[in-house]
Amino acid sequence: MSSKGSNLSFSNKGQREYQTIRRMSLDLKRTRGQWALDVSRIEPEQGVFNGELTASADKDLNDIKIKLFAEEFSLSPAVQKLMSGGGSLGSFQSKIELGFYKGKLDRLQGKLQGQNVEIENIKIPKFSMQLQNEGWDKFQVALQIPQQSVDSEIVEKSFLNPLADLIPREELNFELKNFKSVLVLKDFNTVKWKQLSFGFPQGNLSGAFEWNVDGELAGQLLLKNHQGAHRFLIEGGRDQPVLTQVRETPN
Image (cartoon, rainbow, N blue to C red; front, side, top):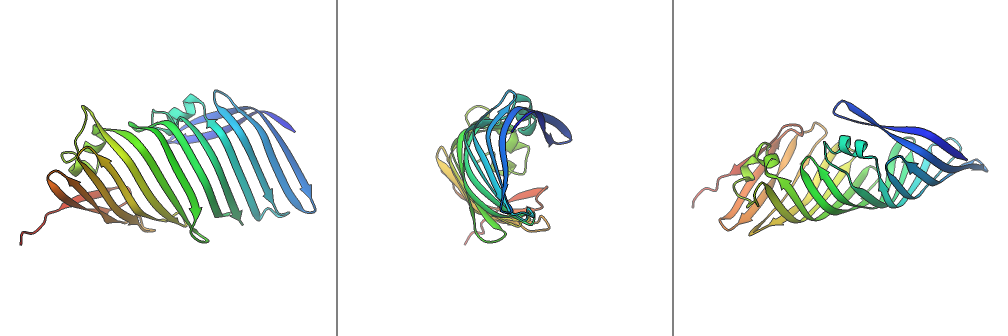
């Protein structure tokens, strides 16, 4: 079966864009009470999808399994600009398996890679994201970014401002290397960053923090540079975080 002219809606900060799908080829079957869907061709307008999407489900659609494989996937420039805050999402490769039971995500496994990403003046030439289950309602995401460039204004005008004078910059940007992060999501309400680290010229930053179902933050960061070690507490709320430097008490 072939479909033409369908649209996907994307919204961000009250604005909306549509991704037109020029053509989509799919095969939907029901055998012995089981549904099977195979989407072998998707042609997004001003975008690319080179891959395959398959899904299976029981007769009542309570137990749904989805597999997404893509050698290359990108959205239209207008959608990318909207979803990245004026930048670009670049292109992605993926091999991901998802499972839903009675409408709730209960399986997430696979890998997502991307390149040429620019979000809110953060430039990421490439990244790698590993996804896996840690239980019925708990998922772990391991993110690695070999190199990134962060606009200094983002740091100076955000809760990260206490770090601005401690990290060296190149002109108007902070050049960061070997960013690694492991976060755990429980029921998508509680988030724990078990590991957070990256390097910069003559130093590194590491730490861990989490927020609970009420959005309350708790954690700390440790920055080491030529001046020594600097410890910071992460407090406040998810929407209004506060970073406070801990002043060491002399012995």
